[in-house]
Length: 132
Image (cartoon, rainbow, N blue to C red; front, side, top):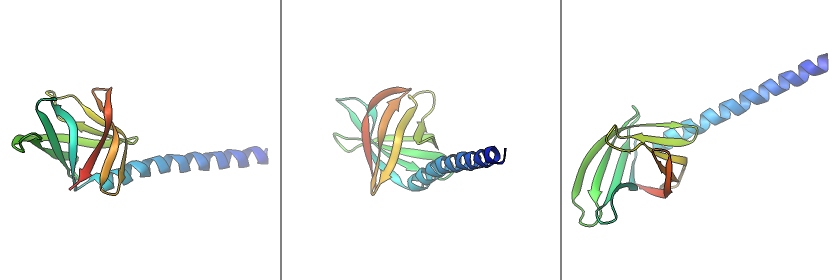
């Protein structure tokens, strides 16, 4: 009986350790992203009128996307959005008029934010945004 209690205690401690580790990953990602501006293609626009996004992520869960037409450098306007990180996915919610953007498997390596872009749950492409 003592042996079973001991193994149950060890199993419980390992479960708690794994649970805390996954939470820290999201917090680390959040800290790496917050307060910076990331520039790249988030699939706004079209092949003929590509739009480059420069997303600024603030610590209150809100952000601004400073969009610019790639082909001529003119401003396409600023879009506010809400953002959050959950289970290693960065969510960018621009509201009802735009598809929910998810960057799954998000990671920050040096000056680059990398991951797989999904629009409303459908896979689009691997993306890489550069920190400005």
